[in-house]
Image 1 (tube, helix red, strand yellow):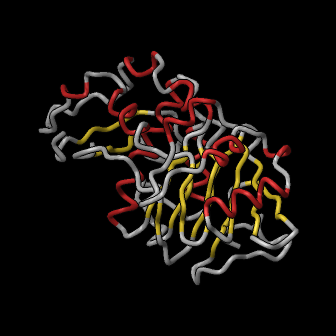
Image 2 (cartoon, one colour):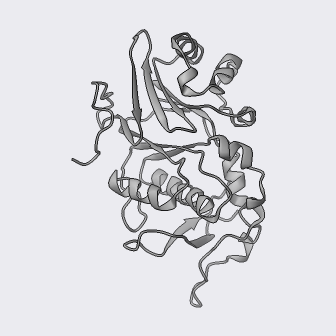
Image 3 (cartoon, helix red, strand yellow):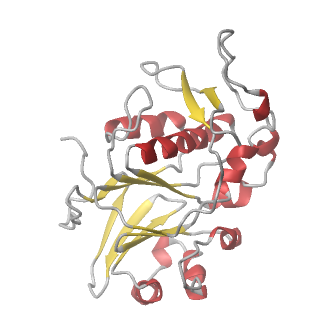
Length: 276
């Protein structure tokens, strides 16, 4: 796919923002790495509402993007957990927004991770793939090609197939639970290691069914000291540190690590306003 292909997408967004946002199609789509080594802030967002407006508002409030859809989170990493794809135009537009911001983050030294949830796993092959999305009408003075996009949303489908349900980000494993059987198709490829089968079994449990023994097993199998587990259906989050009995329960958006790479692990500090 030529990297010069750029489109503008219309969507229901807050009145203060532009009526369209631009998407530059990726030159190639390859399977995401399962391991990352960030040196800056890590922020977790929940995209399960499927609302474009809600996600836009959260990204603006948390200083991830500005009103012109530019990435302003610097070299920070943002993790968006899915379960938002219900096949509606708005949920598809939300995925297009994440697709677009992903490339913009990389250009600024940051990274946007998208971890698919049950709706993406079960609906990834749905009829929404073949629907012509609501692309903006091309300006008569524009020189951008757009006919190549008439395969509906299949570019977005191909992009989804590169995603992981679990990623190791620094000394943490960030993962979703309460997942369906289809999650096997979205396993990360850790260098030199086979994905532990026992972890996959536990990821199919809801968060309130994961006990201390399950957490200890996942810690050991993935060889990470910190687990960040979100329930794909409820949006609830637990943060577990290895060899510590207490887990921290919260809801996104949460700042998992600050700009010095520290965990804000004092009770009550996880559910914080990013700008106070």
